Length: 366
Ligand SMILES: Nc1ncnc2c1ncn2[C@@H]1O[C@H](COP(=O)(O)OP(=O)(O)OP(=O)(O)O)[C@@H](O)[C@H]1O
Ligand SMILES: [Mg+2]
Image 1 (spheres, helix red, strand yellow):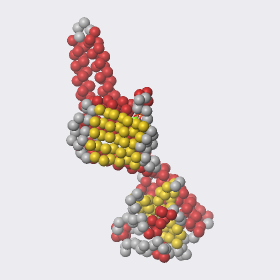
Image 2 (cartoon, protein in one colour; image 1 turned 135 degrees about the vertical axis):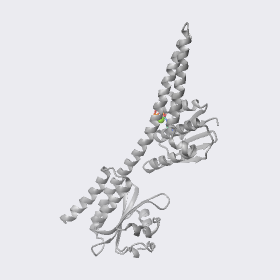
Image 3 (tube, helix red, strand yellow; image 1 turned 60 degrees about the vertical axis):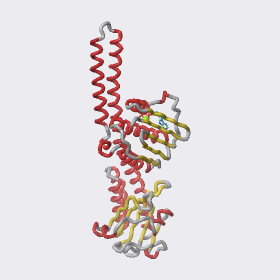
Image 4 (cartoon, rainbow, N blue to C red; image 1 turned 90 degrees about the horizontal axis):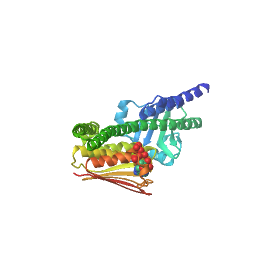
């Protein structure tokens, strides 16, 4: 009994510590599965995380060798007993899984499972996955005690999983936000140069001999232009050169959809095809899309954000809370730099917002 308790404690602590060691979500899954198998002395253990398409986004097993895994074939779809468990969110403890009404068989290379214990891993109302064990090494199958232990374990696994996901999401967000911030900062450096240029021009206007001031104006203008080019090209998202604008946007949207889709349940969509644009304009369109997306996600709390790219037009729609576009006072750096960027390539930016959402529309010359 003492030894049992030790094992239980170790299994749970392994799962929780896996997260503090900042392992990836996938590695945390593996730790959880292994710990559960050890805890309940099961020959086989698996953890499945459902995706939205009737299959599993992750399926981690313990007790099956790589060769056996290969031979079994593709990941299971959500059918049979697994589907029932996901749907009904109930614990299943069976003396023989093959006699369960929902049992539909398995691929020929699949190990033969007998006694079975499956428990959903839940975070509030959401089913994060199911963990199940089969073929207890000591005869007699899984007991009511085992069931209780696995339920307790699943509760800790849920915490470990949620944290691991948050951690991974944060890491992705930090990278994306850092890039956007850097772009703005450099943009500001150029703005400073233009500001001195304006002051020098003003001085030239009132100077008895404007020649030296005008020369300085010329130099500053040249420098500002060079700096601006550099900023745009250096920070031109690397993928723009390789993938083109539409594909870069699609990829960016996919990352955001993954990041924001998980906990907050905001779907981010892209539609559009490659449109031929000058490289400087492409970079501007991409940056404006980025800022509009962040604003929508951060401030709007929408259920859906859609990015649409058609020849000469970029639109970002969100169905969030909207804001008062007439109230300039709340404008941050984001809206200001969106406008500046649009103007820098001769484009026009319009923002319409109401209580039911916001549409940011950018038109650029082709
Ligand atoms: N899609 C949107 N939905 C709801 N509110 C928005 C949206 N876009 C902008 N806003 C509002 O407009 C304000 C100004 O946006 P802006 O991008 O200029 O600054 P910010 O996002 O607050 O800060 P940052 O300088 O980091 O971008 C936001 O703080 C927010 O209140
Ligand atoms: Mg912003």
